[in-house]
Image (cartoon, rainbow, N blue to C red; front, side, top):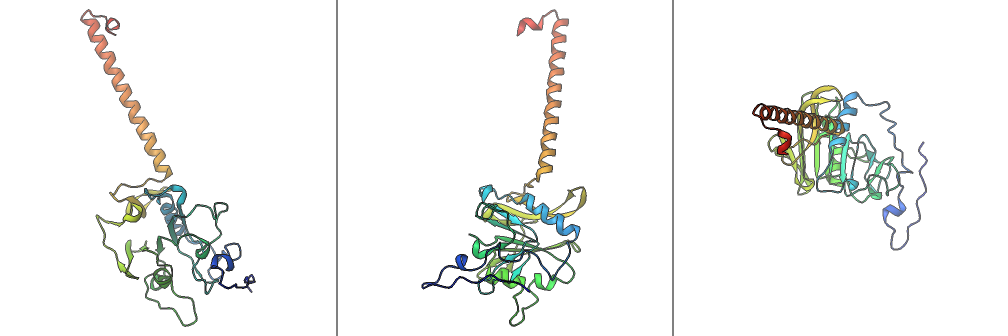
Length: 266
C-alpha cells in the first residue's frame, strides 16, 4: 500500500501545484508492475541518445535527458506517471534545483516539460506507443495521450530495432502529425539538431543505431569517438611533421652536394 503524503491545505487564492503537490522525494521512482531490468538494447540505445544530445544553441548546463525515469505529468492525479525509454529537455538544470540527482521527473516541480521523447518498440507496446490504444474510463491515459494532450511534447519518436523502422511525430495544432524526413534525418531546428539512423559500432556492437546529428548532418560524437578522433588527428599531425622533417633533411643534403652549407642560409 502506498503511503501518500498529506496535502498542504489550500489557501485563498490557491497555492501553485509546485508548493502543494508531492515532489520527487515523495513519489515512487520504481515501477512495481514491471519488475526487472530492461534488455541490453533498452540500455545501450538510450545511452547513445544521452551521450549525443548536445543542442548547439543551448548552454550545456541547461540541457537534461534521462532514460527509463518516471515522468509524473498530472496535477489532478499526482501518482500517475509514464516511463519513457528516453526523453530530452532544454531550459532545465542537470540537477534538481541545482542540488540533487533526480529520482523522477515531476513536471509540476520543473521549469519545462520534455522537448522530445523516444520510445523503443517492444512486443506488446506498439499500440500504446503509436496511439492505437485508447485509455479506459477512470484509468490513466496512454503514453500517446500524455505526450500529445497533457504535456504537449513537440516531438515524439518511435523506433523499432526489429524492423529498423523509425517513425516520428511533431505536435502541430494540438495533435501529432507524421514528420517529413530531410536527407534521411528528422530536423528539429529549435535545438539545432536532427535525429537519424546510423550504421556503426557503439560499445563494440555493430548495428543500426538512433543518434543525434547537427542540422547540417554532421554526426555528434560521443566521448569515446571524440577521443579516437583526437588521437587520429594527433597521429596525422605527427606523420605530417615527420614528412616535413624528412623533406628538410633531403633539401639540406642536396645543398651540401652542391657545395652550399645549409646552416649558413638560416
